[in-house]
Image 1 (cartoon, rainbow, N blue to C red):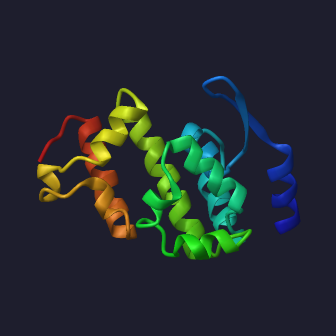
Image 2 (tube, rainbow, N blue to C red):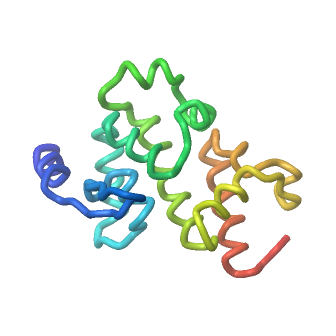
Length: 161
């Protein structure tokens, strides 16, 4: 199964237009998930397999570039330090899971907010419904991701608390 998954990572690509360049994204990579969400059949099961195998450093770097953050900004979100992340070529299950959680959250945010900038601004602004905390501050745990995701869904359906 791992060999089949590695082959599909090499062969399946989606093109995304950048500012002045085209970036090829591997299907089901974290950056691809940001843009395509659950477009593909078997999406969730595929992501579980990807988490088990581990996210490659190059895929992590592509995600960072795609969502417009720096490693330093995202260090707070990850269960490993930047120096630890830089030493590895493939990340462990816990870090990989957090990377995919981040990708799925950005996909949801981009689909609900009018622009990437609006979503990022919302993430970095204190929220009354979150006790005055910035949503980004809650992304250091799976429960925090769930709270922020629930808040985005409330915004999507105009249900404010």
